[in-house]
Length: 124
Image (cartoon, rainbow, N blue to C red; front, side):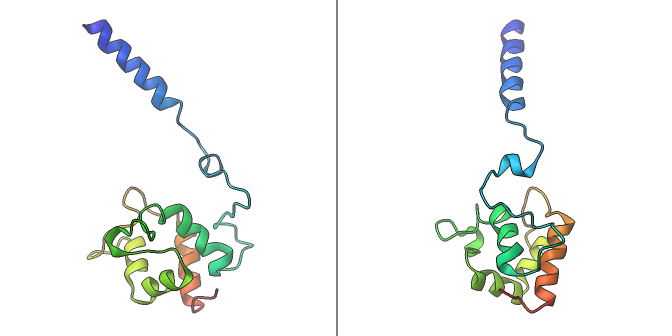
């Protein structure tokens, strides 16, 4: 019985370990990938904000599955949730708001990029 448990543990360790990647690009291989933390990019929706949203939010906040009744597929939708304060407060993990993304906070550079976009009056 002990050998069976050890075998199962070993197999599960190999399977789980083989799924590990250490870079964002390896996890999200897309042609035209944009690194939203690239400081040479402008803080506009089309050049960086949509990439932050795409990689961190759209799996749960899209038209097919709008988690919390929130869809973030378009510029207008993202702007709406920024203007009403729901998006910035959620990604900053402020009390009274659901922390988003729930598993792990956005990188500081992504938070700064979104804040710059908001401060610049939401350029497309």
